[in-house]
Amino acid sequence: MENPKILIVDDDVDHTKSIQIILESNHYNVVTACDRNEGMEKAKLEKPDLFILDVMMSTWHDGFEMSRELKKDPQFKDIPILILTAVKERTGLGFKSTAGDPEWLPVDGFLDKPVEPENLLSEVTSILSGKS
Amino acid sequence: MTPVPENNRLYKRAHWLITLRWIAIVCVVFGTYICNSMLAIELQATALYSIAILLAAYNVVMLLLLNRFNKGEKEVTCREVKKIINFQISADLLLLTALLHFSGGIENPFVFYFTFHMIIASILLSLRESYLQATFAVLLFGLLVLFEYMQIIPHYCLRGFVSHCLHRDGPYLVGTFFVFATALYLAVYMTSYIAVRLRRAEQAYKQANLMLEEKDRIKDEYVLRVTHDIKGHLATIQSCLSVIVNGILGPLDEQQTDLISRAHKRTITLTNFVKKLLELTQMRLSNKLEMESFSLNNTVDSVVETVKTKAEDKSITLKSNVEPSADRIFGNQFSIEEMLTNLLLNSIKYTPESGTVEINATSNGEGILVEVADTGIGIPEEEQKQIFDEFYRASNARNIERDGTGLGLSIVKHIINRHGGKIEVESKNGCGTKFRLTLLKEKGSQHGLISSKTESLTSG
Image 1 (cartoon, rainbow over the protein chains, first blue to last red):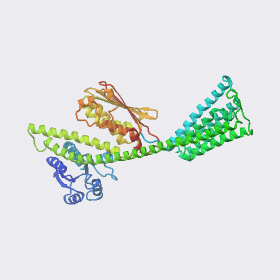
Image 2: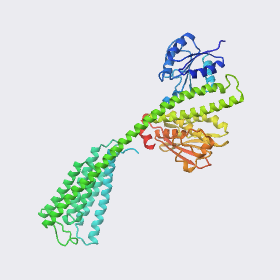
Image 3: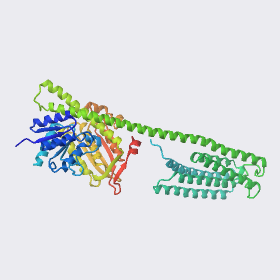
């Protein structure tokens, strides 16, 4: 079986690099993009098995917008999304309870930044296995 | 301290007037009795007692009227309270004139007690209203003196106090009346001079208070922005270091591992600190909290689940119990969960191995009492007042963990304040700590948002 492909969309390239290494060392194929437009282009081009999105890119809710856009698109609506961000403190809200609400936050998982490698890997594994 | 709204201030003063009147009534009754029976001064006792009874009845009516305003729970406007105060002072002047009439008229030195009414009027009412009251008093007294002089109404001589009746003594009347009238006007002039200045000072104080609030908000926004930027960078540094520390790129030698681990740990500490600071600042800045009713039992379960491993690591027994009657709680679920987690983690951190940490919730009349108790190191008594202050850490806590944030309990206190609740601490150095929290029970009509900015200000 081919290794799953993950697309990371995050404007913090250093952070992207660190999780790219973690994922690649566990035999995932990783593609990266640093903003929403590039993210959508890469999505169409690479057809990943999982999206990892940062919420706060050029505007503070870019990641939410992109996840809504993806879930509306028939081509991507079945591909899981993992939100990885520091936004919790910005809004004073815990998103965990609302993650998965298709209207508001149509994502499959949610992790706070910074994330420890083992947490990231277990979340990714569980999301990908849930899908199949 | 927040400035008291003008209408509340007046409302309280109106009650004060009523209290003063009770005192006056008692004095009239006692005075009459003493003059009559001990000093052998001839008084129209029946008339004076009747007026005292009338005063008492009128005072009760005033009290009921004010209380009705209170019960209606609608905001009483300044104008309404001023109307009541104006009416009360006028009625008092009238009754005082009647009292004087039956106790010697101008022969009675108590005529100068009119001055007190002028002082009260000048403090509570506008300048114009005060002068009108003064004029009313001068008019009443003038008419009393005039009518007694012209013998339109009878004069009751104050025998035993004056040697002969003075009510037809022209120069005495003119002199006393002149001093009386000028005394009243001067009293109004002087008192309102001071009262106006005090009111202005209060106004300036209110303005300064508002300005400080605004400055505080600007500072919070600044802190929020700065800490948020710092946190972004720290998160990335921590992620990059984790890759190395976890040996993902291959093993390191002993010294390399040691140094990188130290850097990694420090980054984690710093990230936690910045996170807490962000959380607190965020809370200080937001005015509204979404309130709903939810199950405290489920919340406590989820909190216990979160902290369980930390307790197990130290073989600490973790007990929880929520009485069924204390289950439905009203508040912001996320904040309450956060607050209880903070308290439990604190207890676990400062409780030695094999200790006990307990969380219990019981119904307490109107509210819910949540108790978080541990068998930990306790908080020295002299430091208990400061533990909720931002960045404060108890001396013995610093020995356990050098790099704590000192923000955990400030966050707890903030959340409690925003819920209109209470938190108390009971602790002895070395003998454990118990935090007692009072929260709101579910109420049918309480859904929606509450504004808690003022709350956090008054208690902060």
